[in-house]
Length: 241
Image (cartoon, rainbow, N blue to C red; front, side, top):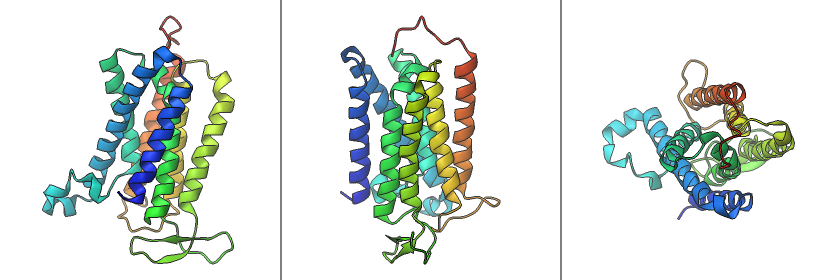
């Protein structure tokens, strides 16, 4: 098993334990079930987006499309897929989506931070070469190690800072779904902001990487979710997820 898979697995394990630690005993089972739906959606969305972005290659290698273990996931595609997977899961479980999304925010934070660290160890999503003191050794997909702009570490640290900020804001976010929507918005904007600092090869759509456009789409969906969570009835009569 590669380093990337190990770190993602650790992120998933930490995230699920974090969710359990914040849940009452009667809430744990359905929150874990909803988390697995979100993770399945993230895996599917991340792979579908990756295949779509590299369609000329996969068109001639169709057998490799489902072979996730060969590598290749889109971070922004995983965000979108995870959100859709959670919506499907809450429908199957007959649970309030907004409250479950808030409860699963630790899973989003943990997996996102782990994914950035996994990219650092795996030599993907690396930054541009620099000679300044703040450059850190990082390798590319060919194994060459150079001092680079620490894009992956900035992504991991930015995600953890986002988690701290959301915890500070949580007492003021009284409508179900607001915390989760802000979390998705923050993670999406981190992806978008750091995309311009990446040096790994990628085609451009207009002046942006495809990943950046997908991150903008995810951020737009988060803004819509935040608006709905704020304007719709807050569901106080709904039992806690």
